[in-house]
Image (cartoon, rainbow, N blue to C red; front, side, top):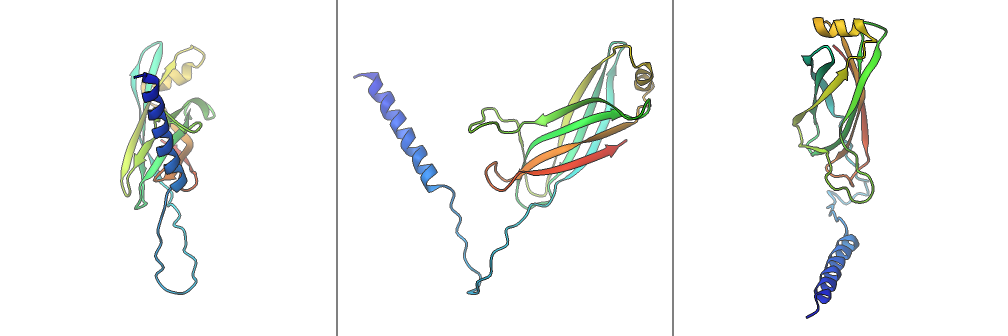
Length: 184
């Protein structure tokens, strides 16, 4: 038999299955608690709780410094939350007027209809996770006071940014944004 027939049949079967899923869609049955015409209140997500778990210099040389940063995120909601991204900016406030020295992003946001290899975090209800990142800064020689703070471990830090999250799935509820700022 011709293999194109089997491929065509497989594609048609997948199209039917996908069409059935899209046609039916998510269903939710709500049983009324009483006969009155009260409207149901949609439960809003409580904001996540974020804290700066750790920021430290793990490795330093004449040419570069490695800074490790960790954030603890707590979900106070009973339902799970999907943490898409955490964008942050890192400032060293000890040697000048709070100049940004780096920044980063942990996680990824969906782009388009299908996302392969998504890098987001599912945070179960009433649990926490720790998100970590490493920052490697090159010594350009232009900031000797900053490098001196690194070598003597006297750097004072300010970290600010935003966390983007949804309730339980990428398609349910709206995207939530939480701004944070820490000094250490």
